[in-house]
Amino acid sequence: MTVMRSLLLAMCLLIGAAGPAHAGTDPQATQRLHALFDSEWEWEMRDDPERATYTGDHRHGAQLTDRSRAADEKRYAHARERLATLRGIDREQLAPADRVSRDIMVQGTQEWLDGEKFAGLNTVVLDGEGGLHNDLASLLRVSPVATEADVRNMLARLAQFPSRVDQVIARLRDGIAMGWVAARASMQQVPAQIDGQLPDDVTRSPLYEPFTRLGMGIPPDTRTALAADGAAALRAHVYPAMRRLRTFIVDEYLPHTRENGAMSTRPNGAAAYDYLVRQHTTTDLGAAQVHAIGLREVARLRGEMEAQMRAAGFAGSFAEFVHFLNTDPRFFYTDPEALLAGYRDIAKRVDPELPKLFAELPRTPYGVRAIPAHEGIGKSENYSGPPRDGSGAGWFNANVVAIAQRPIWNMETLFAHEAVPGHHLQTARARELTDLPRFRRGGGYTAYGEGWALYAETLGPELGLYKTPYTRFGHLQWQSLRAARLVIDTGIHAFGWQRTQAIDWMTERTGMAREFIEPQVDRYYVWPAQVLSYMIGQLKIVELRDRARATLGARFDIRRFHMAVLDNGAMPLGALEQQIDDWIAREKARP
Image (cartoon, rainbow, N blue to C red; front, side, top):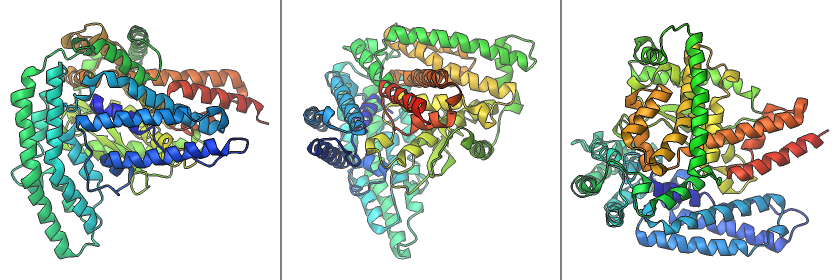
């Protein structure tokens, strides 16, 4: 995901609809707030029809989202109007739950507007981590194809794709003119990512995949005709536009890139990075403080990793142990399907244990599937949430192309992060909290969502995971990776670290393979400060859990604590802390 898209997502998820009014409040203030939530949600669905598709709202399924500079200017103007309306509603006249929703929306809208002065952030709209070239396949993958009307909508979007490419090229040219360009190592991945989607036989393209599963309710002759229309649309609209984008990247954009794409090398980049640190961590921490926290946590985790090496009976050095783990054939699958089956086996073991730690579980199922091959070996494992309308499952997406870099002893902690009790449990539970405004039923705050997922990894022992020194080492190694990110991201963007320096430091401290660390570091160049959210969020949740346990003593119930964290939806860490403090007070007063 690019910087621009992460900022837009943060704004989008501030919009929702609220629940009923409460006694003792001003009905007019409550009505105004709820009406604003409703109107803003509808505005968002119209303004960002691609996001609407991901939420399960297909009313605007024939349009693509306008990503032009003019559209962004309109969004900023609209956000200023929204903020003025919110501030015109007296929070003291609202019920407590509505106050929280209002405050979160005010904070998030103001934060998004604070980024308006960093215009360069809106120009880095494509890189090796994501962008239009990969987004189209993802969008088509979640688009409905049950009816002829659904397919006609998809065809309309394909016809608009050349215009979207024009918008992307225009924004990238803006970035060149402003001195804001993506890092070279990341952009060098883009041509191959495009090529992987454009085979000579269009029916073998991942972009054609939706046309292979058209709804059986469509008459057979019509299905055949629609599939032919899909192939024709790809040839006429998408293939030429993708090739034009590729030519622009290779001939015009890449020559302007630098190996050191740090924020500090860009105009006003240091101030922009400070802004992104605040946005992604939802705290007032500065880069130096984050850097120091990372150094402390890396040192602590290195000691615990070495203890597991000794528990395994290994007599050599740390480097030799890591080499053994990364090269011994017993620790690797050779068949991609076996790798996926391995993850599914973990799911079967974990699912029955979840009630030990959670008073309630989401009803929405999840599955394990492969990341599309064209996204490449450097693509990280990730999670795709279920549609808000409940029409589908959540998905843990595993990179089977990188099978040689995915040791078996790492799989349990990866699964716990992306699936359960990590992203899927949190996201699916949030979607079911119908008493909350819609924007609080999803993500939007990386420190909360990624902090929860990283915290969820630490719950593995209670769920029957990490039973061997090797899997315990794997868990600690991934924790160490997230701690090292605090050092590397701030080192690159605030303290002048070079790419090779960052790769060397991270490889030595974590023990991870250099081939794995290189794309990790490249990711930090293209998505500055985002990776800070993982460890900062986890540390806050651990702090709150320890506070609750110390305060409540024998009354502390981990199952109830977890629901208190999850059942208020996504929010900044400061708001989460207040929610948990209130929960602790209620628990103390409970009979």
